[in-house]
Image (tube, rainbow, N blue to C red; front, side, top):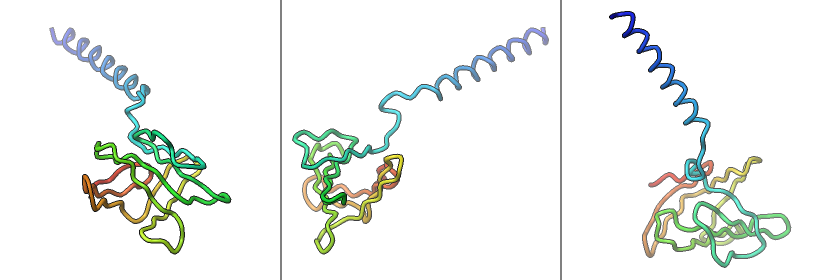
Length: 124
């Protein structure tokens, strides 16, 4: 009986290991919560959640547009221009991963407060 149990345990272990590997290899669109960067020359008419639209002028970021990640669907307008307030610094890595500094803190509406670091939302 002990041989049957250990054989069954090996089979179950192999099945679990195979299923785990399959799950790790499968990445549905919603599995990666990173905010994706879309470069544009103007404000998008209908921005989509999960993206930050970065308007540029002379190759430099000037404005950003981001659907609020809380779910209220408001479009946030972010300034990257020097000598303006409020303003944010944006860093876009070679693979399109984006970070904003300082945090985004809405003073009206949903009053969300978050940091966008390496493409992920961190709530404050």
